[in-house]
Length: 155
Image (cartoon, rainbow, N blue to C red):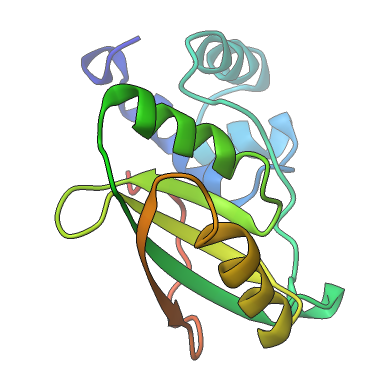
């Protein structure tokens, strides 16, 4: 399903689900201005097309003891396809890395990290990240506070 195949109702459904993934089908249908059965069919079609990939709870990290959010810019010594894939695979084994992006520019990867505290993050950077095969440079950025949180796709 391409964006051109999405009509205004589909886009409304996607906006509403990004705001509240637990909304009932009846409430969703009411918000987008259609009856419940066609609304459910549309949601299922969006799921089957892979436009809706899943549903998640958004957790309050500090209330669970994760007080530090940091970003790491990682430069590799070599950027062959095999080297890039190997590093990407390694990030999947690091629970502290919540998101990993291959990027262009001065670095090869941008890692979004969540840690219990500064000591745990420092241990990860020193013992795991900088010690990893093919890692050349690591620049870290500690966050001060989140100033915006929005749905991942702005429709």
